[in-house]
Image (cartoon, rainbow, N blue to C red; front, top):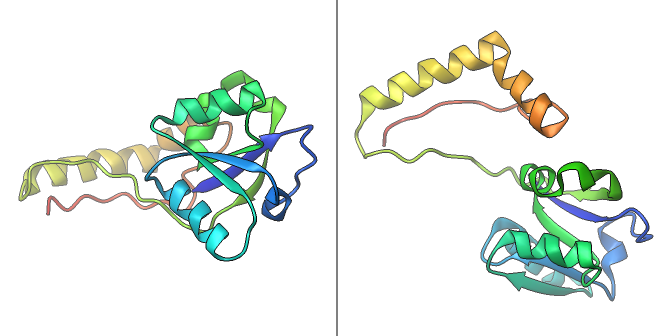
Length: 149
């Protein structure tokens, strides 16, 4: 899910706080499209696009931008231990699918992947992994399923 993160000392408490501010995004991503939609909807903010998401995080850490819009999992990963210095002040209601690509028509592989994912969900291992690496159960409400199509 795309989120907006800001430095804890920014004074920004929600997306409307971006007026006159600069937001970094990875270009051509859901976060980029969401920020463009916000601007089209009247939000007066500047969007700085970067080819690589790491550059957006470098910019906020250096104080060159006021916010980063990215996927919540990406934010947790790139901030790591520094996450305590940032706040998520907005969450999009846009859900992004995470996919695995496989050869079209490979129903046998899709079936094996479905069995493996079901086992990981049922055993609680997915939740355990999420909590270990992301600090919370980000899998809540997720459905696993591969079609091979």
